[in-house]
Image 1: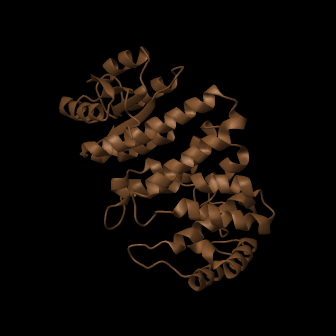
Image 2: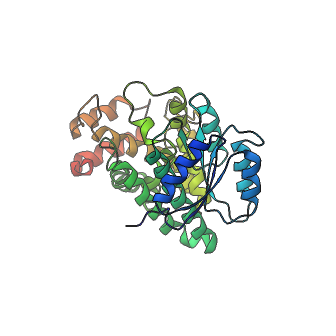
Image 3: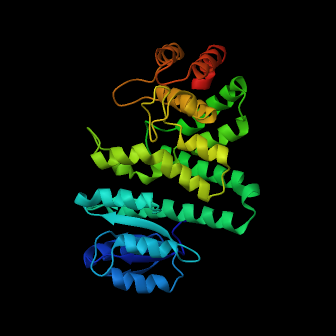
Length: 328
């Protein structure tokens, strides 16, 4: 199967010539055609000519910064995908770039394969955005998000502790929707892509042993917001966007990213958050085995009125008692 980068035109901008050359070699091995620039000003001139599918840029450079290039890229009629290269001490700048619209980042020093992986994901996201722009958005958003869901599933398969999480969440929330009087079709669609914002977190960061870096923790906390913005750009309707944006909120107000509490959390987001939490309980983690149905029910009851709303707990407990196979 050809790489998503095959035939793509890429602008690589980094004032460290060796790093620019390393990125160019790796992406050209994947089939891309690359042009390198070694200052922000040079990068802006090349970018203005258009025709690039992907921009890979350092954050701090002479002449203009990577954020300047990001802003210029977003003003183009057909914006390229954007990957940010960040120095170890400037990860906060990369995270800020994501919040301004970048599609991913890689921290230096890096393995060339890391850049290729992030670039491939970003290029696929851009292709989906182009599809949406070319057709009637509301009619096509569902199929586009299903494709995006397959990308999320592929991402999860690279981590033995996350494999199957989104599909299991979708299966669970489809059952909860009926009990809670919610739109099951929209909830299942939201569940398939609810963790799309996690694609912004480099896999190497998630797979580190020990405590995650502060910047990585911050990025995880804002992943619902990033995911909601991405699916909004792909034409998702308001219910799906809302579910994704608030699926990590808690009934007691101690969730994220907004600290919403109780009835202020939209019902569609409460249902999705409950299903996602149950799915996480069913997956093994480095520090524990996967939980069986009895243990999941115990955790749900324990979290009633704190992590979970009472209606969601009642619906989930009944569903698991009737259909323990939902947790497989």
